[in-house]
Amino acid sequence: MSVLWGFVRNPVLLREVRVRMRGWRTPGIIVLYVGLLGLVALLIFAASMRGNRTVGFAPEVGAVIYATLAMLQLVLLVLAVPGLAAGAIAGERERQTLDLLLVTRLSAAQVVFGKLLAATGFALLLMFASLPVFGLIFLFGGFSLYRLGLSAVVYVVTVLLLGAVSLYFSALYRRTQTAVVAAYGVVTTWILLSPLFGALTYHVFFDLENPPVWGLVFAYTNPAFGLAAAAGLPLSQMTRLYSPILTTDAAREAIWWKYCLIALGLMLLLLWRTVRRVDPLRPAARR
Image (cartoon, rainbow, N blue to C red):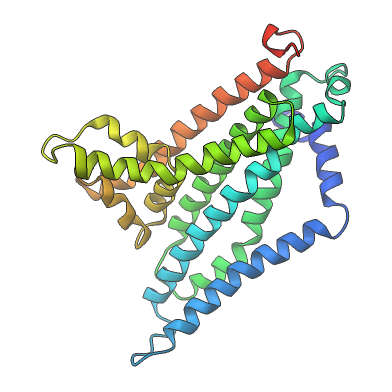
């Protein structure tokens, strides 16, 4: 408990939160974010009311709205987190304030974790602010609170992983622009190309009777497939891309927790490397 309280009382985190919460920008972004999700849900519901067969408040409509909003929220988080975290350390270097942080009683690990929690905390705030929208959709039926909880776990793990990746590039490069471009480039390229690599692996280059096990790395490291496995139908249909080797529904559903374990491992590795680069006592941190 004392360790957790120490993270919460981190001066870097408290300063970043106070600065970010000042003014109208943060409430405005939250309202815009929730409004966008609500608008998309309203448009899908309006589309279901049109046509020859009116569907209205039906479980299948709720499932479609939930699947759309779940994937849309993942896309928005992927776009938001690198922009929030990639300039955290590089920005301190540009303002020439990083050395001032490092000569305080704070360790390099406290600085890095404070920056991580400050950057990802706002993204998690956006995620939790969207819960009322998902609560309204729950009235339609079509998905369960269990699936919503699993999706929330995938969101939290993904946000932390993206924050760790962005912080690593922020510590690797001296300029904020370079760190932001590198973080967005790596994250978006991998998320977009790994489904393509998976499709080529299991449906083009290899015999379906002897599919390679290593091809599952494209599923276990992609948040889209982790979310699809956690959210259930109709998103879980995405996981059938790996049906040549994941032949059962249980094996495909297990993608979400395997993704979470691998993502947490990558996050810890990247944070360890980031701390080593920030620590002025390490040779790698010499500038």
